[in-house]
Length: 203
Image (cartoon, rainbow, N blue to C red; front, side, top):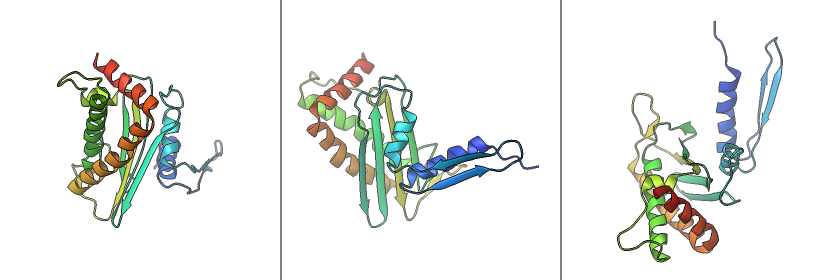
């Protein structure tokens, strides 16, 4: 027999509703035991996804940081928020496929996040000499959803859940430089709070 797991399907359909802003998905289980109905609709897209993940957490800054960049054959969307938690939660997708093993889009995000935070720390004279925070320290407490869309995705590994397109690493880097860098500049108080969190993680 084929046993359908309602919760597994609900999780996947909820992801789709988050990743495709404005789409309505009605999901009904009509099996005899007990009829269940879920209407999935998120006007905020992946910003709502981050808020959903952070329901039980305490954010360091009230607003979810959101950025999107698009050219002919590539779209990058990133939503992130720092919390007072000690663990990170990075969720990445390529063409709505959950890239559980990450890939070039996630590598670009991690590397650029670290560099921007360190550059900002130097600018504020928080670091002395060659002092800086590690990539792990920069990600403590962060919840981020990285969603990319591209016309010719190349997936690696047995399960095809790792993105291999090198151009996507560069494009995510470009988007992060433009938007996250600007966010820190324009929101000095929030930027200092994020920086303090990273320094505390290092200590």
